Image (cartoon, rainbow, N blue to C red; front, side, top):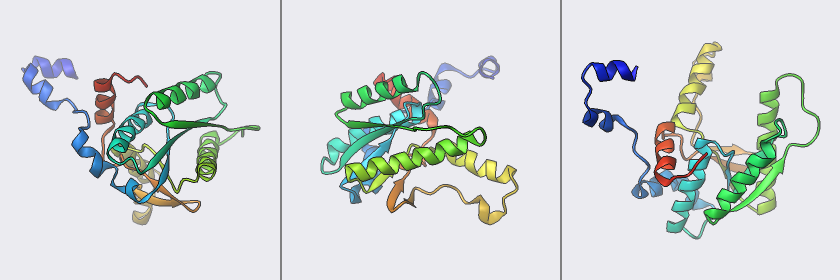
Amino acid sequence: GVEHLEGAGLGAMDREATLPTPIAPDELSALFAGFGGHAHLILAVSGGADSSALMLLASRWRTQSPQTQLTVATIDHALRPESAEECRIVAARAGALGLDCVVKRWEGGKPGSRLQEAARQARYALLTEAAAEAGASAIATAHTLDDQAETVLMRLLHGSAIDGLAAMRPLGPLAGLSLLRPLLGTTRARLVATLQADGMPW
């Protein structure tokens, strides 16, 4: 643990050197290079650290590339009493960053089994619907390097063959749209550091 490392003589300077650094402005053009071919994109934002960082960083990138329109979409899965309020908070934060936001609600009954899988399918269906309504050609999600590692590990644990161990890709198709994952090479720790440096909660 940290206490053990400190007891072993890890000085303050060494500790600081290992802390994750916020994402710098000069990294944005490479990070969002895939956005350039789209006139309008949907940013999938739940309000967690990863997607909040996606929204913050994409809004900064847009100041360098104002020709690309960004719309935040947040999904109310209607599974918890506080979910509607969380969507309102996301919409308010998007507005503060100068971004439009649409809220989509997962209506109807919820399955008694495999709820997480059903919620994922509903989420992507609603994001696709939001893209169609906005005239957007792509959806961007906030999957990170940590998610990538977890995906491969879970597939390994479930006995996938080598072909089944393929990791998530930065660009893929989704119902006639492009699915972009610009943060796939970025650690969650750097995204959290970026939010903390900005003072944005999640």
